[in-house]
Length: 96
Image 1 (spheres, helix red, strand yellow):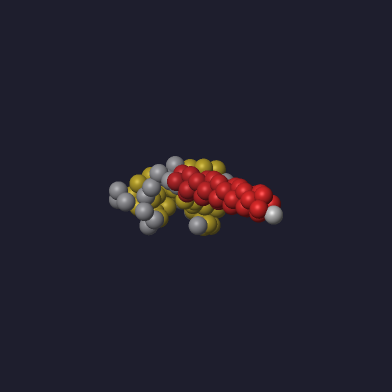
Image 2 (spheres, one colour):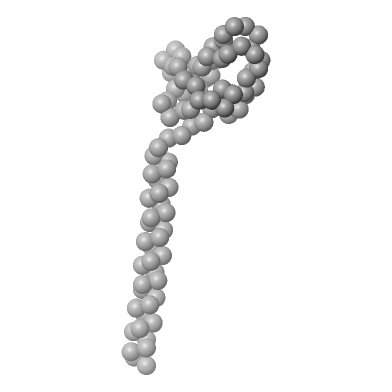
Protein backbone atom coordinates (compact mmCIF):
# COMPACT_ATOMS: atom_id res chain seq x y z
CA UNK A 1 0.00 0.00 0.00
CA UNK A 2 1.41 3.40 -1.02
CA UNK A 3 0.19 6.79 0.17
CA UNK A 4 1.21 10.39 -0.38
CA UNK A 5 0.38 12.66 2.55
CA UNK A 6 0.84 16.40 2.91
CA UNK A 7 1.18 17.13 6.64
CA UNK A 8 0.71 20.83 7.38
CA UNK A 9 1.31 20.47 11.12
CA UNK A 10 4.51 19.84 13.06
CA UNK A 11 3.95 16.15 13.75
CA UNK A 12 0.97 13.97 12.89
CA UNK A 13 -0.03 10.42 13.65
CA UNK A 14 -1.36 8.43 10.71
CA UNK A 15 -3.90 5.80 11.76
CA UNK A 16 -4.26 2.76 9.47
CA UNK A 17 -7.05 0.25 9.93
CA UNK A 18 -4.87 -2.74 8.99
CA UNK A 19 -4.52 -5.38 11.66
CA UNK A 20 -1.37 -4.76 13.70
CA UNK A 21 1.35 -7.38 13.21
CA UNK A 22 5.10 -7.43 13.72
CA UNK A 23 5.40 -8.54 10.07
CA UNK A 24 4.22 -5.19 8.70
CA UNK A 25 6.96 -2.76 7.66
CA UNK A 26 6.36 0.96 7.13
CA UNK A 27 8.53 3.36 5.17
CA UNK A 28 8.25 7.15 5.21
CA UNK A 29 10.17 8.75 2.35
CA UNK A 30 11.93 5.39 1.76
CA UNK A 31 13.15 5.16 5.37
CA UNK A 32 11.83 2.42 7.60
CA UNK A 33 9.78 3.78 10.47
CA UNK A 34 8.32 2.21 13.59
CA UNK A 35 4.71 1.05 13.51
CA UNK A 36 2.82 1.55 16.76
CA UNK A 37 -0.26 -0.42 17.77
CA UNK A 38 -3.35 1.78 17.75
CA UNK A 39 -6.31 0.74 19.89
CA UNK A 40 -4.39 -2.51 20.41
CA UNK A 41 -5.38 -3.95 17.02
CA UNK A 42 -4.65 -1.34 14.32
CA UNK A 43 -1.52 0.47 13.12
CA UNK A 44 -0.24 4.00 13.44
CA UNK A 45 2.94 5.80 12.40
CA UNK A 46 4.35 9.23 13.14
CA UNK A 47 4.57 11.57 10.16
CA UNK A 48 7.07 14.39 9.78
CA UNK A 49 5.87 17.80 8.62
CA UNK A 50 5.55 18.36 4.87
CA UNK A 51 4.83 16.03 1.98
CA UNK A 52 5.65 12.37 2.63
CA UNK A 53 5.46 9.17 0.65
CA UNK A 54 4.35 6.28 2.84
CA UNK A 55 4.66 2.59 1.95
CA UNK A 56 3.42 -0.38 3.95
CA UNK A 57 4.65 -3.91 3.22
CA UNK A 58 3.60 -7.20 4.79
CA UNK A 59 6.63 -9.51 5.06
CA UNK A 60 5.86 -12.64 7.05
CA UNK A 61 8.86 -15.00 7.28
CA UNK A 62 6.77 -18.14 6.82
CA UNK A 63 6.01 -17.25 3.21
CA UNK A 64 9.73 -17.32 2.44
CA UNK A 65 10.13 -20.65 4.23
CA UNK A 66 7.09 -22.11 2.45
CA UNK A 67 8.43 -21.06 -0.94
CA UNK A 68 11.83 -22.54 -0.15
CA UNK A 69 10.24 -25.84 0.88
CA UNK A 70 8.10 -25.86 -2.27
CA UNK A 71 11.18 -25.37 -4.45
CA UNK A 72 13.03 -28.17 -2.62
CA UNK A 73 10.06 -30.53 -3.09
CA UNK A 74 9.84 -29.69 -6.79
CA UNK A 75 13.57 -30.29 -7.29
CA UNK A 76 13.47 -33.59 -5.38
CA UNK A 77 10.45 -34.71 -7.42
CA UNK A 78 12.20 -33.88 -10.69
CA UNK A 79 15.32 -35.75 -9.56
CA UNK A 80 13.21 -38.80 -8.65
CA UNK A 81 11.41 -38.70 -12.02
CA UNK A 82 14.76 -38.48 -13.84
CA UNK A 83 16.14 -41.33 -11.78
CA UNK A 84 13.10 -43.51 -12.54
CA UNK A 85 13.39 -42.68 -16.26
CA UNK A 86 17.07 -43.63 -16.31
CA UNK A 87 16.39 -46.88 -14.44
CA UNK A 88 13.54 -47.74 -16.82
CA UNK A 89 15.79 -47.09 -19.81
CA UNK A 90 18.49 -49.37 -18.35
CA UNK A 91 15.92 -52.09 -17.68
CA UNK A 92 14.65 -51.90 -21.26
CA UNK A 93 18.21 -52.11 -22.61
CA UNK A 94 18.89 -55.22 -20.49
CA UNK A 95 15.78 -56.94 -21.85
CA UNK A 96 16.67 -56.14 -25.44
